[in-house]
Length: 323
Ligand code: AMP
Ligand code: MG
Image (cartoon, rainbow, N blue to C red; front, side):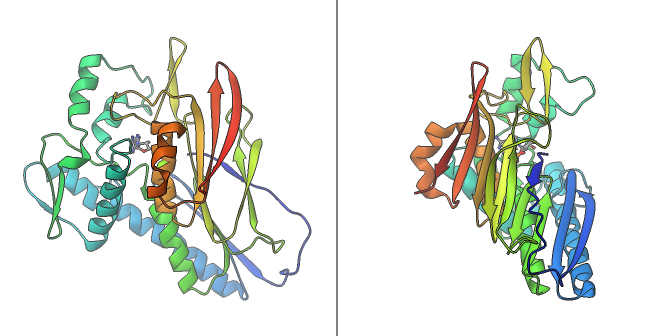
């Protein structure tokens, strides 16, 4: 979970007659906040509630922790018996697998055996042995997920899917659609820093989203993204990690090594139209590094990305435009 900061623009602007509604919930392992604006309070309230319901619906479908979810069922059974899943799950998994392929496996939705082994969120996390990492790494292989006629199966024992690097983005896109159906033009969808900014802010300008400076106190930003009907998603090593013998072990794993990605990146923020794609991209660029990614960037849909690098203790940021 990464915080993004809404830069307040304090003049009241010309939309002061608009009504505003905000709803918040814990969902998809993060704090979800949706604020929307409409001409009546009833319309704003209804849309904000529908937005939260949509995220809850997606969580019930894609969470790896809820026993009735498609992903949970796949993880339990797909190595022995093909698991029938919903059309929506087929669509999400197919797109995600296609993305894995395009990143040559830097992004891999079957990362879960390694995520479980590292268990970053444990009270007292430990660095696994090379043997343990090797064994878990063998089970991480997106090419061994087969989807056929609405059924999902794994070709290897012990495989497990983890959509932690994609589901929040997917949900942000779906909420955007739900709000549009409710006639909302201006809204801010925030899934733990995974942002979709609809229309314009209260001051009737593009939304201004500050990117958290990884080196500074929460709330200090180093760059401002201006968004209007656009998403911005950040992946960073500085919020979910543990430290052992002076080394940082964070939550974004390089499937090739089985260790947390150890380039010089501290954070990657991607903006664009699809939050699903931007979510996967921010994680993938974090694993690959900018040099590798720049070689294959034409295969992806985004506007730009901003990285913070750490070079021997000195932080810098760089902006990479798509064109
Ligand atoms: P994000 O915060 O969007 O970068 O996603 C990080 C989350 O995605 C982690 O907490 C894991 O659940 C999952 N993850 C970690 N490494 C990878 C990877 N190489 N490919 C896909 N998902 C990953
Ligand atoms: Mg991501």
